[in-house]
Length: 90
Image 1: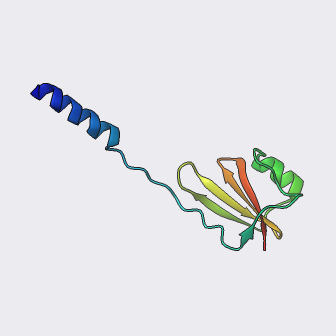
Image 2: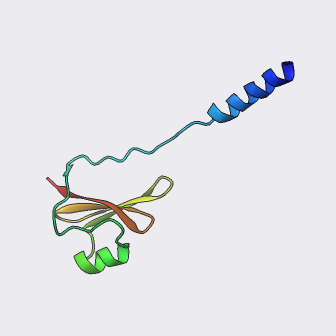
Image 3: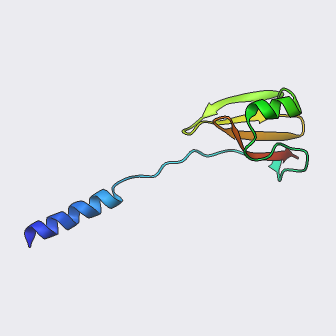
């Protein structure tokens, strides 16, 4: 009985022992994206060829790495080299 109780306790500790972490993505000053913006899944190379060079590029942050490219009218967020979100600037 004691071994069963110990096994149950170990199982619960393993199941609930991990901790979750996340990075916070600040999108202040942005609104929903409009037509004529990069779409989800586009590569960085395709975005640059279609919309030109970004006005600024933020260094990758977190794991997986999230990169932000800022254009005059919108901001594009990449995970690795693929677009995950684009928002229009206010």
